[in-house]
Image (cartoon, rainbow, N blue to C red; front, side, top):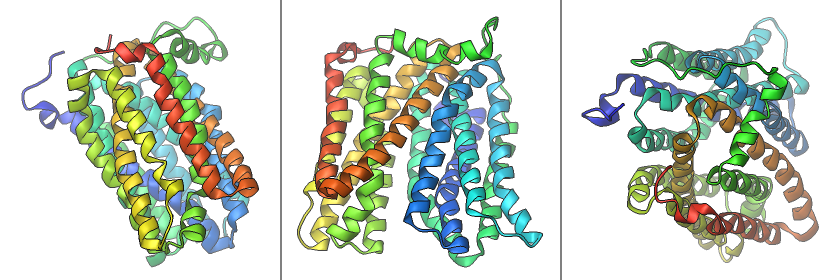
Length: 413
């Protein structure tokens, strides 16, 4: 199907998908910050409890990623997106409903909500990745992924701020009810998509689902361009969650940044991601997908060294972190968009769900192990030294792709 005149701006169904994904992205960020806020505000939860919440959410994604991928290849993908939105709305509505009946959620119930949100988040993300090639032409994929990534970058900046405002101005149950409404709005927009060409027909399934769950992993490992991306994803998620465990502690306790300074610093990552989303299609056209992934990924990873090297007065330390967030996140976004487009282009359309599930499970599992390892290592040798190790690990995972066939992949074929 050729690209249409006016590009994706004139593609009504893509614009509806983009709108739904935008609302859903904000909802996911609000829930990510809001459920822990509810635990702190309503139950007085401490750091250990919040650490368990993060681990439970990631573990649910790791465990269900392959299953979500199999579902995305067996069921209509648009319907799966709508179901995921409605399920997330139901999870977030349960706590306000309990509050109206005079109850208060327990910490265990908040953990359960976090786990369920993690499950339905991965279902939505996997189905979304597989659905896009059904909706737009192959030569529009880079532009489509770029637009979706730009929305994610804006949500990364605005979502946490919106969550803070909601939970400051309203009670946790009411704030969660507003959050649930974002998923209902997303489901409504998705329901208005009318495909102009038949959806990709799922393969005839003769094997039991339990055998099919490994299909995405086998598909990923068999492709010479996708396999190194998957292995790199595991390593980057593992070392990246060292930052999740220690970044805030390092910024506040070691560099003496105030919470306001830290918030501005983190927001620079969203600004960089937005710029990277605009740059990705142009860079991929100029260099080819493989070299773009290599150069942008390695350069973005190199920026991370600025974080553990930050020192001096708080404003100087903040400048180091802000540059790392701006340039590092921007370049990493270029690499991520190009890698996603490459996968959508070279893998069979009917198996994109399982492949995306394999990536989601690998990333989440690496994240769980990395958060635990980073926290333990940080306590043993200090946050600065641990973040230096993490930076080196992410850089190695990106740079070593130069030893793979991606080095010469000038076309997605």
